[in-house]
Length: 62
Image (cartoon, rainbow, N blue to C red; front, side, top):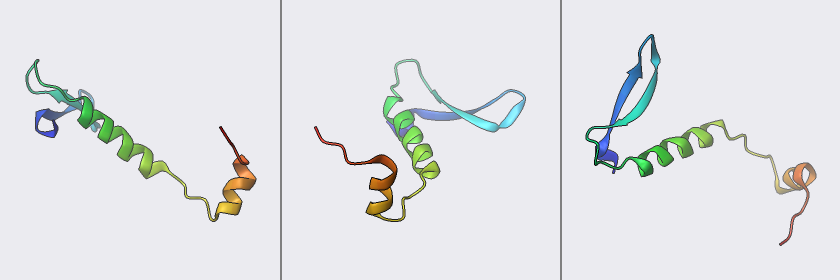
């Protein structure tokens, strides 16, 4: 899955790299999901304590 991904820069903006397939029949869904998950994890701001989390969001039950 990861081996099917090639990074291509967007014309006019060398800072942005997008994942593309090497061949049309290759699948890159898993690699794209991993890239998105890592991006979200990098932006995550950890709550100090459980109490802080409960104070911010409350307690939810199903």
